[in-house]
Length: 215
Ligand code: HEC
Image (cartoon, rainbow, N blue to C red):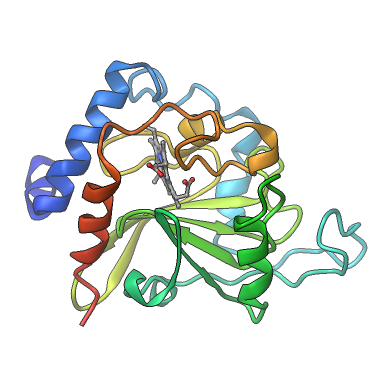
């Protein structure tokens, strides 16, 4: 990302830069920006993200009980997160017609679980995880990672895909989230096994409160 576009990020981005920058020093991100490290299993999944022509007619339904249609995700799905469900430190919504209560039940299960397709999570306005349909990406447990440019007028998706997506500061989403214990379905929070972000919960809350997309 160029210096010029970095400048467009305001106070919240500065805080995140401190947080994620510190994490790189601790060795959480992938090596150095040479992007060829862990791409093996995921080379095909990032392109799948854009096309929803999945031939899943005969695919076994792995964990959702019934066959699930491809989850279509567009930039307009990422709106003001203050209008979403608040679960501890993060925000949650459901797209694709599913019941948000099912997603909340997993989020509130003390033993973890697998989030249903169509679950959308955000910690900060510039990053999101969307649970895609079974078969999207085994490596990322069918999560699609998004890096977003959240502006007052609209959200722009700057990167999306599976294990190769990086945030605005070069941090690989999957490398950090994959540290979560298996039962937590790649969700980090503060006690799931991921290295902690060096920003406080109240700072995260204030970043959410300054979501530029909110009225
Ligand atoms: C440096 C490691 C790191 C990187 C890189 C990173 N995350 Fe996270 N992420 C975390 C941690 C740790 C938390 C939990 C923070 C907390 O609750 O205090 C988190 C929280 C989240 C949450 C809320 C749910 C949860 O897991 O707690 C979402 C959604 C999320 N990140 C998405 C992303 C996306 C998308 C990217 C890439 C564009 C990304 N993250 C990059 C470490 C990272």
